[in-house]
Amino acid sequence: MKSTSIYNEGHQWHVFARDPKKVDGIVDTNQYMIQSGDRTLLLDPGGVEVFASMLTAVLHHVRLEEITDLFASHQDPDIISSLGLWEQALPHARLHTPWVWEGFIRHFGSKKIQYVPIPDEGDTLDLNGLKLKFVPAHYLHASGNFHVYDAKAKILMSGDVGAALEEPGAPMFVEDFERHVDNMKLFHQRWMPSNRAKHDWICRVRELEIDILAPQHGRLFKGEDVQRFLDWFEALEVGLAIPEPASDTAEAELTAVASS
Amino acid sequence: MRESLTTQATILITAASVTAELNGVNEIAKDMTLGVMNAKTISHRAGESAKGFQPITDYIEQVAREVAQSVVRISAGASVLSRLAVSYHHSGKLLTLYRRVLKDAEDAAHVASLVPVITILSQEAQKEQAHFVRDLEGLVRQLDAMKNTIRSSKVISTISRVEAANSDAFRKNLEVVADDLESSTEKIRERVQRCHHQLTDVITLVQREDVS
Image: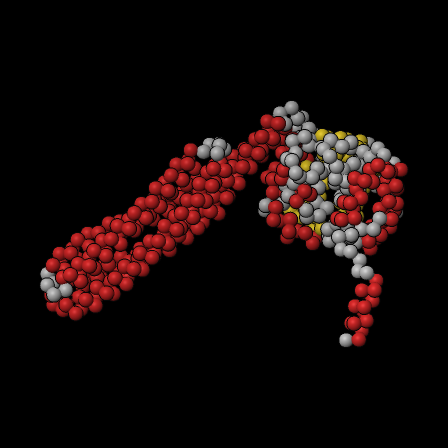
């Protein structure tokens, strides 16, 4: 598992990704870790298949007892199916996750861990004095979904927003935004179900100062590429799996309903 | 833990097989009950000459009832086997996984923090193994008790043959009852013996696994 430090000024951000031991056929994932003094938060710690590599990589930076908190942006297996394995090593850690998913995430073999449900409007986690904001991102793509914003580091961990499904070994940061669009267009059109949810998120995120946008798959965006991404995503029509009804058909249906 | 997947598969197959054998035993016990009702009618019709046969039919009835009750108890235990197998397999798999990380992370600065976790996992896996073996041995003991019941019913089938000989008019009918009893007990004995073998094989397999 490749480990990259993306921020180190008083507290640290690491991204773990591009696992060379990854089983074929599963998507590559970016796992993040924030160290603040003697407390550490793992963000979207990954699926069971990457657990061993992830734990090995983490032990290069922290002692197990320093990992006090886990965060799961939503309930997907590539996000948190390793929970039952982590909790063997972290019996006293707390899991911050959208309230809607607690009963579902427990299916990943979790018996001991303490759940801290995040309310729909979001919340703040104090990690040894570092304030981390859980930013609502509902329906992007899961119906209960949060991102994590660190105002000090100006990093937004953006879950599946900004994600790209690429060949193994892709660079850690976007180098040519226009070329990268091809890697993420279909993913956003197909996985993101709601234009309304997208606009709500764009408005919320535009108010944040962001140096690095850090998605859960693919490359991270930094500097001007962050604004480029927001502009591109704002203009993109999403939820394309269900075609829009032809306007004359829709009109005919409305007429039939009105006259019935 | 070596061959743990194979062990789990063997346990699951054994649980299914023991349950199927016990269902077969239950069917035979039901047939025995029907046979007893028939024998009771015959000995009643035979009157005084089959008087010695009546306590025998009562005894066969009791054996059939005891076998059916044992089947219910052992089947319940066998159905728990599958759940125990999964739990046992899970604890061993966790230990293997964490040991792999310990090896892979040997040059990591904080690898020592993994050692207490592995110690706990190892203790839990040993506890799980001991619990599993204890439950399996409990099932084997119940099968042994059933074997004793069946052994005594074999003696009864011999006595019933002697009593049938005293009843001239109904001798043939009562001999058929004795034959049926003998055949049923033999079938049950074979099935119970197969369950016994399978469970003791699983105990050996589990005990051979090193989870320390």
